[in-house]
Image (cartoon, rainbow, N blue to C red; front, side, top):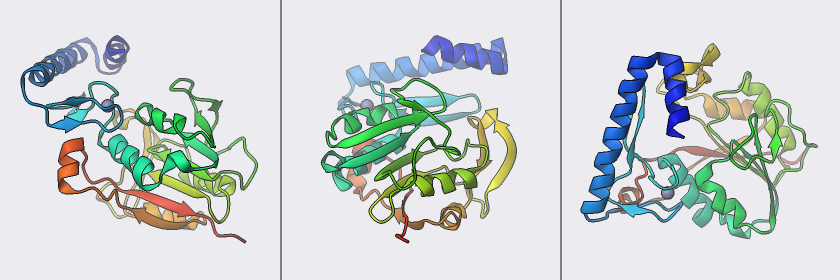
Length: 254
Ligand SMILES: [Zn+2]
């Protein structure tokens, strides 16, 4: 895993910067592992039950996110927040019907398995991570009005045309009780910035969404409400979760 990551960094940035980055990652990880062995525990990962002193830093070329990644399941703040919300607020284990999960997150896999009455289809444009169906969110291989839950996080940044994708999600969502739970990275700018290409320096994103993200969902036909994770300050510290913003969208019955 680390070797394939190193190769991709080397191909993109060259041998010397990639090797420097690898040493930095290895050194920081060694420090965190030692701290987790020697110091009292104070963090818990809700996704996998790991306990320790500190999460791994998430280090990419050009930026570092300290205390971010679970050493056991690789979850980040967003995954841990979504896990707790799906389990405790949404009560996913009790749900019935059909769920479409885009770009399935490894850390959330136990929750989908633990919902026996929910038919879950995991979709992505690439195989792996337990994907059931290879599919493009701009052209979904489903009839209209079939999905009781659509789970779509940090996907719309990367599709060629997010407005087409939102219309497709609207088409397949069941009118009335169906819910699209969606999030993207939202920057400080008012309006979404289109790059016009897949920006490798930003994880292949084709746009940087701005404060108009909810308006774009509304324009696709959804009723949109923002969701709070509902965590207390002490829970945020315990689980290593920053405030996360996501949206619940429904489709009115015609
Ligand atoms: Zn974990």
